[in-house]
Length: 268
Ligand SMILES: NC(=O)c1ccc[n+]([C@@H]2O[C@H](COP(=O)([O-])OP(=O)(O)OC[C@H]3O[C@@H](n4cnc5c(N)ncnc54)[C@H](OP(=O)(O)O)[C@@H]3O)[C@@H](O)[C@H]2O)c1
Image (cartoon, rainbow, N blue to C red; front, side, top):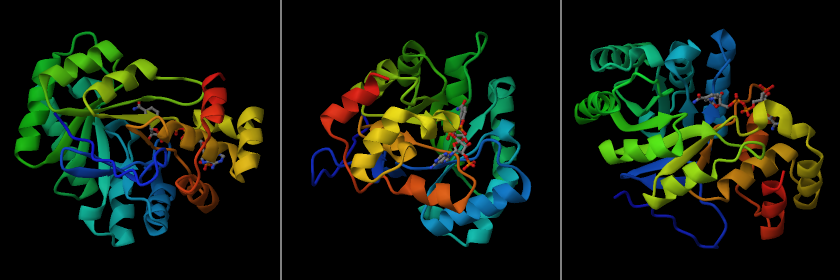
C-alpha cells in the first residue's frame, strides 16, 4: 500500500505536497491544454519562475515539445519538477504505448516522465496489458509513476488491483463532483487529480463562490481550488495563461474554508 504522509500541523490546512510511493507530488500543477507555440513555452517558464513545480501535458495536446522547452528555458532543476503526460487512446497496446512514451521523452528532452497516464479508457483496451507495458517503463526508469484518467470508480478500482496505479485524473470542480472516485483513491491512499478545476473558467462568474471569497479576501477561482484541495488526496491543475491568473491560482495555501462553506459549495 502507498503511504500518504501528510504532516498536518493544523488539521484542515492542506500541505503543498502529497507523498505517495516515495514521491512528493505538488498539489498544484499547471494545466497546459490549449497552450501552444511560444505562448506555451513562455507560460511554462513563467509558471516555474513563480514557483510551480508540477506540469500537466498530454500526447494529444501537441505541446510536449513546447512544455520541454519552457522547462529548459526556466533552468529549473529537473528533479524538482513533477511532469505528467498522457498516452492517447490509439496507443494503448503495449508496443505503441512504449513507442509513444519514448517519443514524448524525446519531445520533452527529458530522461523520465514523473507520471504517465492512460488518457481515456476505451471499450477494447486490454487494461492489464497496457498497465504491464507502463510498469515495464517504470522498471526501466523511463517513468516514475503510472496512473489513469477519465476512469469510472469501478474501472479505477480494477486498475489499482492490476498495477501500482497512483492516480485517476478526472474532471472535478464545484459543478462536477467526483466523490465516488475520491472514495476509491482514499481507500488505497492514492490521488485524484482534478482537471478543469475552474469549470473551464466558469467559476469566476459564480455568485456564491464570489460571495464566499469576499469573506476570505480571495477570488472565486481561489475558493474553488481550495475547496477541491480540502477534500484531501486531491491535486489541482488549473490552466492559466497570464501572470495574474498564474499567481492568483498559487495563493490557495494560506486560508481554510469553514465546514459550512465547504458544504455550501458542495450544494452547488
Ligand atoms: N485528462 C483529461 O482528459 C483532461 C481534460 C481536460 C483538461 N485536462 C487538464 O486540466 C487542465 C485544466 O483544465 P481546463 O484547461 O479544461 O480548464 P480550467 O483550468 O478549469 O480553466 C481554464 C480557464 O480558466 C481561466 N482561469 C485561470 N485562472 C483563472 C483565475 N484565477 N480567474 C479566472 N479565470 C481563470 C483560464 O484563462 P486564462 O488562460 O486566460 O488564464 C482558462 O480560460 C488542462 O489544461 C489540462 O492540462 C485534462
